[in-house]
Length: 154
Image (cartoon, rainbow, N blue to C red):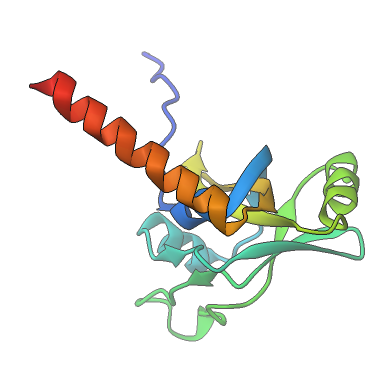
C-alpha cells in the first residue's frame, strides 16, 4: 500500500485585512471545536473570519464573531452562525496569549482557516494596531514591489 504524502489543503478563509491593520508579532496554530454541520460548511468554504477576534475567558480561548454559514442539508442540527467557538490550545499557550492580550493596543485575531489531516485549524496572530502612517507605508511598499515586478517581467 502506498502512503499518500500528507499535503495541507490551501486556506479555506483568510483575513488579509488583519495583516494590513495590525503588525503581527507572533502566530499560533489552534484547533477549533465545531459541530458536525459546521465542519461541513467549513469544508465547503462557507466561513468568514474578517471581523473575528480571540478572547480569553475562564482559562479558555474563545473565537468570537466568526461567521460559519448554516449547512444547507443540516435541518434541525444547524447552530447559530455567529456563536462563540472554543479554540484548542495548551494551558501554557492560553496563559501566554492572556498576558499578551492584556497589553494596550494588542489584539488576537484569526489570520487563516485551513484543514490539516481532516481537522479544521485556525492560525491566530497576536497583532499590535498600526497607525495611519504605518498603513500608508505598507501601501507605498506594496506599490513599489508591484512596479518592480512589472519592470522585470517585461
